[in-house]
Length: 503
Image 1 (cartoon, rainbow, N blue to C red):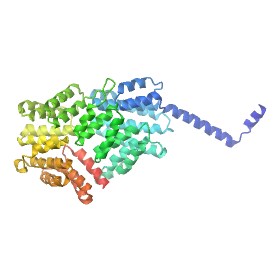
Image 2 (image 1 turned 90 degrees about the vertical axis):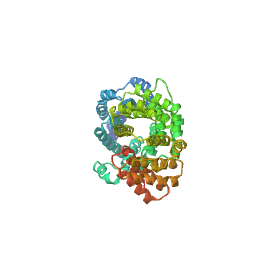
Image 3 (image 1 turned 120 degrees about the horizontal axis):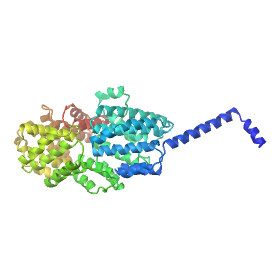
Image 4 (image 1 turned 30 degrees about the horizontal axis):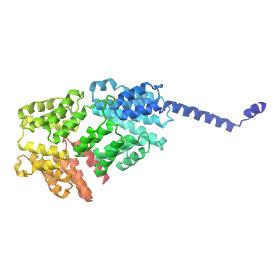
């Protein structure tokens, strides 16, 4: 014992400092572990929330012993995000919106020695940015995105091997990389830097993390569908993701919307028919809206109307109302019940908000129809459009074959006729037949700056890109960007920017 005391007193200053460092590290790591602990209950809660099984997730969260665990705060925030995005409920948003600041303040008090601290703060900001965009709060959402970006960059610099950072940072780098050249000064001014290729590489890196793998895979596929160009190979990857997650309602839903957007409505219908169901899952009225759209594309107007009315009975939000009433109008109008159809279009002109593209298109159609009416040939074009958009190209061609451009009186009708034929042949893998029709649509659209010119230019860019004619492809992508104030400007511009940056 005497020897022990003597040895303890004789510790060198170096040894004493070493012990102090070890103690500091020990307590720091203990604090970090306590501040951000992925307990078994939180892992399951996060998995359930990702599947839209929010009530089971909330029960698991309520049983967690520590209310100050940063991971619990992160999972609770994720659960709120998916609930608000799915419900689209203004009252629920008003009640929940102050939780962002409360959670950010709580996370800032936790150990900044953990890579989870900045990551969780960034995720909370991004969650609320998505929610605010849905509820029309664009300016506040943009500031959340900028602050999240800075947190993620800082986290990457401090903890370069922490894989979850790359899930969201990769997504933001792709969005930044798709900004056109003449607006890059804005991103530079705000300190935002990144490229599409960099973002894709980071999403691939994030997929190596077990906790973030599924979410990173889904984000990667959504980026390809909504910003880049969705390929057949991407469709097969999406199908594998759905097959590997049979109980994940969110993946089934997003897979269906992705395939529908890319003209594969039969596949979208299959995903929705096989979606998981039960009381544990969040109600999703929007699924009835999508089903109504698919049946409308197939010409099954009674089934379409049933689903659209069910959507309106159960939905609490303000987005997609114009779209739903517009599609109910089509169910009657395309069966030549014009008098029964008109009240639905009057409703479309007055209800809801104009944020999403579907509502913008519905509003524009309603304003034109109610002020000027339509010609009989517009019904032909509408049937062809719906069938073509759904990928039912045999039906679409059958609608248009009896007609030629001279049968249509208005420049907009002539432009649409050519655009529809061009898209039909493009979907049938016959680009050489599609090109003249798409070029004609562009020519007819330029004077009135019609949306058909923008969308036709985008598709011509893709065709020439596949032909490896980079100069011609670039000229058409640039032309697509020059069309102003059309209802599809956001999506067309995003894809054209991404394609130009890829060139």
